[in-house]
Image (cartoon, rainbow, N blue to C red; front, side):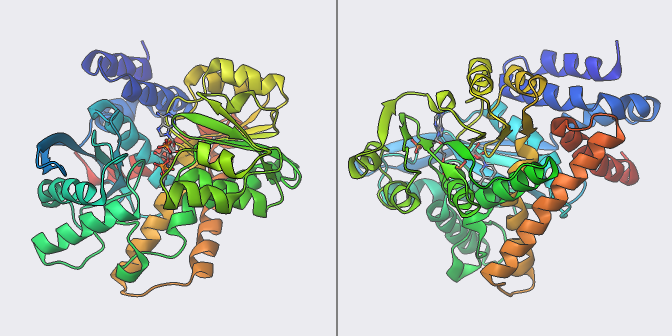
Length: 443
Ligand code: NDP
């Protein structure tokens, strides 16, 4: 049995109840075969793959808080510090009822390679809780966030581990967490990113993941002689990533006709009205039925369905495993040209393979959604030098980073004989830098 297969089998045995983590490990290790085979003796001796799939540490803790009725609620908090070979741990905090250790490990593992691809000095980590901010009052969200940080603050810091937002964690939650960190430590430092602009946040961080997704997609299309202008785009999700992906796609001249949330989806033949979507989701925190109510031409459907809409480009921007084999078949049957992941691992392995086999340009999230974490790293730089850069400056750096990521992974794919396979390219390009740092630093 080859080294890659041995390690996948070991991960399967040791983490049998963590399917998402196993899925992420399999996807990455399988695509690393060319580089692992070429260096097998060294990597085996140094146990590179075994070290890569085992986090530096997993922190799990109780988060007690008091609800508006005076009852005590208990949630579970997690922080997985996966790998800090190239910089302090960096990755978001997910607040969603589905959160468990396996999901945080999959996200932390992916984050190692994503962060490496940005070419910035940041290691991989991720955290979160099974707390659901939906339907909670501001006071309840604050009570949770303060309790969460009261435990987590011991393990994070501007030079050790810098958490950020993710599903369910936006500027409001980061603000409460930063306030509690400061109170406990007396330190005004860049320990969290995604902060508000008045207390150390970076301009363009809110837009960064969605905008970055489009900068990457545009470059990928350009290099394949395709113009994004005039193309029809379907997007899933209606959160931070989806909203700004829709906005940038429209600015680049494409027409976006769908978005979705956890209960249903919108088809708007006139193109999604971003201002209205922001009002519904960012201000009112309401359901997409409110979008439909304000746009008589739009359709609202319960459940899943955006991938059945005819399009040229599909951008999954909601959550993991939301684009499955049948969805990929529907997209291909409708003539899709490109699929670029805004979310983390939204496309299942089978769906990815099907898309690639059918000639669809496929951009893996660890590359195409790296704009968020890249801009978080720019926020860290601004915090360190106690300066704030203009929107244009951050946005232009983001654009440069995304274009650079595309070319790095395109080159890596070509170097190992996998031209056009951006999954292989992203994994190899992200992996090589981390492994070189691990080898240099010893055991
Ligand atoms: P948000 O919480 O802002 O938005 C998530 C959106 O997806 C919401 O519309 C939500 O619906 C929907 N959604 C969440 N879970 C499910 C589910 N199980 N089924 C169907 N729909 C669901 O999160 P973000 O936009 O920040 O994150 C989206 C994805 O992008 C995640 O995979 C995240 O890890 C990834 N990502 C985010 C980055 C960032 O900077 N924010 C950076 C890189 C990756 P509803 O409105 O009903 O809650």
